[in-house]
Structures are given as structure tokens and as C-alpha cells.
Image (tube, rainbow, N blue to C red; front, side, top):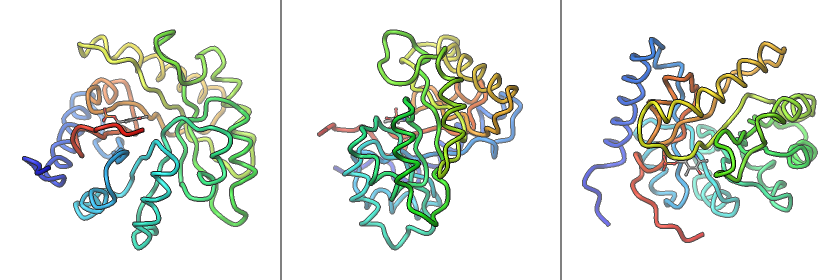
Length: 235
Ligand SMILES: *Cc1c(COP(=O)(O)O)cnc(C)c1O
């Protein structure tokens, strides 16, 4: 299907949205990292984004991500691959071996498996604890009350480096409504740092709510649709 605008043009638009939101929040635009979420899109689209300067990519499904990493092996040294989807125990090994980051740690068992399966000699796997900041409506992520205990346990594991927190808030219609769950995650993040954890990553904000996320302190926004277009799910 032909695109009205190229991936490079979409990327530029997203960069401008981030820059404007950062400006509105009196933040430096360079304090917000863009993660391009390439799930369901082919390796050729990742390459097009790479050619337009994008270096960090997010994938949700293990097999699909591994296949893309293999297809783009020539870029491996320059790309950062982030796993951002739900992770089952029987899939942790491939993720520990192939990815640079995992954003979706929601229980200790998964973190322990990743820690023990991270290959000897490779750099620590960067991880975030995923928190359910939207209450009952959302199924993934640890409950906010349990986030601190999980974060401290994960931070103590070898082979992993706990970088921060991640959330996928429920969609909301207005900027003010979107800010509420992001502010909740930010508060948790600040509390963990005050408690001595060395965290630098607040992974929140997607195509529809990146402005709200940046206003509330996001350091990494995960953008799919606004870069690659609408997805047709086959999973
Ligand atoms: C799909 C996905 C995104 C990107 O969502 P868009 O609305 O397409 O920008 C971000 N984070 C996670 C965890 C996702 O699964």
C-alpha cells in the first residue's frame, strides 16, 4: 500500500511533536528519547527509519522481533532493540540473547530467567518494570503498590540493569485526562529514586498521548502508528 508520506517524513513530524512538547514542558528535547515501535511492520520499514536516522526500535512479539533482528543483522551494531510486549517464561531465553532492553518486566520470575539466560560476557540487559497505572481496565503491569518491592528485587539481579518504569495507560480523550496516569508513574519513579535506586528511564507515551507523557517527565516515548502507519494485527 503506498504511503501518502514517507517514513522519513513521519519521523520528522514525530521529532517535531517531541520538540514542541519538551519546549512546552521547559525541558530539553534531547532528554526525550524516541523509540520507534516497528511491530507488524517489515524489516524494510525499519531500514527506512534507520536510513532517516532512527536507531532504537521496539518489538512486541518474540518470534517476529527475532526474525527482524536476523534480517537486519548488518545494522546490529548500530541498532538498539527493545522488547516491549508481554513476555512468557518459555520465551525469555531468546529475548535475553537477542535484545538490548526489556520494558515489560511485571513479575520477578521473568526477571530471574532473563538474568540467568543473559549470555556471559554480554552487556547487562537494560530493563524496566511495567506498572499498571490505569487500574482494573488494564491487565498488564505490576500493581503500583507492588512496584517498589519488584523494582528493588530486580535491581539486585546480576546480568540486568534496572533503568526505570514503563506504563501503557488506558486511552483518554483530553490532554488533562491523559496526564493523570503519566503523573502517577512519574510519582512512583521519583519515590524509587528518592529511595536510592539509580533510575534514568521513564518509558511512557505513545502516538496518541506523547505530549501528555512528555509534560509529565517521560524520558522515552514509544511511537508506532505515527511513524509506520496503522497496523493490521495478525497476532
Ligand atoms: C504498540 C505499542 C506502542 C506503540 O503504540 P502506537 O499507538 O502505535 O504509537 C507502544 N508501546 C507498546 C507497549 C506497544 O505495544
